[in-house]
Length: 323
Image 1 (cartoon, helix red, strand yellow):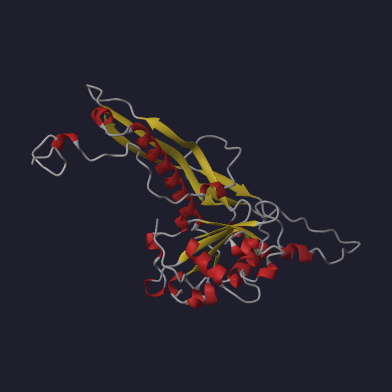
Image 2 (spheres, helix red, strand yellow):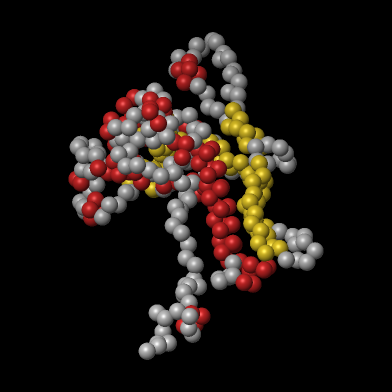
């Protein structure tokens, strides 16, 4: 008996039954980027276009000047006028950045799913990720660092529990910020950014003064049990996996060293000649079969108030993947 069936080859079903495809292409997982919103200073009165922009900061009289003025005046001796302290300057040097994608009309007319919106989303996300990477690169240039166990440098940090992120490190960093007169970002809290893996060790720490002591979090314990990572030691914390990079295995014996940040107001600044913008590439081929889409920007990011930025460096008990 001969069947007209899928099982029997060489028949009608060979061409009529084919593999099916979902016409909706979903996106792969990706980490959110959040460093650019942490930039809260920008020059306001730029005199003219130039290759760079200098920003000046007035300085207050020194402690020595103040102490000298605590001596009572002599009735018959005049005071000696003192000049204002010299200003300090920070130079922003905007650079052009950009990226483009090109595709063919032939692909657009034959693809299983429309390619134009896919390219638009991919290019826009690439712009966002690049800008965030630039901000974080500038943020890492800050010179104030808190490391575990009194480690002298990044290369001295080892992969063990001694060098995991501890609550005492956070307290030290916050104390340093307050000692440098760094202002909170929202009038009350500094801003903190950490990778999820050092957060794991931070939350798992126990003992007096640690994050895990419930009585120090308030009457309601719901935040502890549902894993909330919120406010601690005067810092409002957020988590992002983009805080770790492939080159961050620069501790002792290639230990992975996570960089976290605590920021006060105006820790980071930017100078913008041209904001990031989308660009439709001109059609230059003779038969108009090619299309292009890209983005461009002309800007610079820099540490503006170094006193308002503290970097945290530590290892973690959980392996991390760079993004």
